[in-house]
Length: 336
Ligand SMILES: [Zn+2]
Image (cartoon, rainbow, N blue to C red; front, side):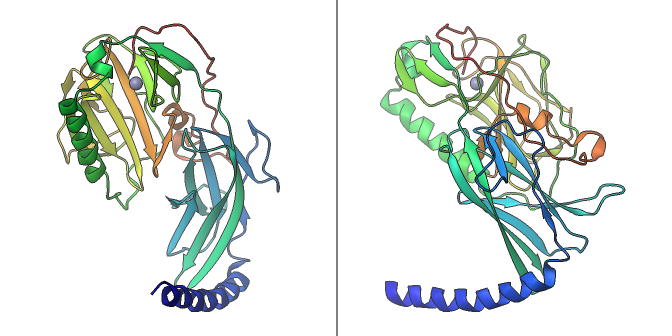
C-alpha cells in the first residue's frame, strides 16, 4: 500500500517536473521576483535573502505584469496566500505576508512560492532565516484556581479551544482588510508579546498577544475590516471577539466587559466592537490583542508597522520590528 502510494507520487512528480521546467522558461520573463529587506534586524540568510525575528511579519513581493490564477507560498507547512497589489508607477505584483510564529525554532527555512497561470506553474524558492527574539520573562501571581484548573475547568477549557478551532477552520478566500490598521484601544502597550510566563512559580504557555492597559469600559475598535467569526465567553479569554480579515488572517480581542457585535457581523476598521474589561483570567481591566496570520502567532503591533500606509506599499518592503522587550523579573500588575 505504502509502496504503491510512493510510486504514484514519484510518477506524478516526474510529470510535474517537466511541466514546471517548461513553465519556468515561459514565465521567467513575466515574473521576475524580488524579496527585499532594506533594514534587516537580523543577519541575512546564507544566500542573502530574507530574515526576521520570532513574532515578526515579513512582506514578500512577487512581481508580475500578468494576472496569475493563484500565487501561494508554503513556509514551515503553513500556507501563505498572495494577493494582487497595484502601485501607481510601478510594475504590478503579488504580496504575501509571512508571519513568523513566536515559537518557530531559530534557523533557516525554505519559503516555496508557486505561481500558477492557467495550466502553467512556476515554483520559486527562497531561504528565510528565523532569528531568535529576546522575549521577556514575567512572574505573575494569580488566584490558585485560575492557574491550577480542576478537572471540570480543564474539560471546559479543552471544549472551548475546540470550538474556536472549528470556528476558524475555514479561512475566507477574499482579502477583507485594507492598508490602514487601527490600534484597537488607546492605552499603554505592555510590550510583553511572547513573554515566558511564570505563574505562581510554574512555567506556563508564553503570552500569545499584547496586553494594552486601559480603563474599564473604554472603547475597543476592530483593527481593520473583516467579519466576526465567533464571539465567546471563555474561561481564559473571558468575553472575546474573533475577527476574520480574510486569507488566513485573524485578530482577537479578549477580557471585554461588553461585546457589541455578533457572529457573522461585518465590521470596518475603527468600528467599536466591545468595551475593555477584566473577564476571564485577568487581574485588571485591559485588552488582550492577539493576531493569527496563516497559523502563526505574531506580534499584533507588527500590523500597525506594516508598510501599507495610504493605500499603497512603499517602493521598498521591510521587515517589521517588534517592540524592544527586556527580560524582567518584576511582577507586572495587569496580565493574561
Ligand atoms: Zn494578554
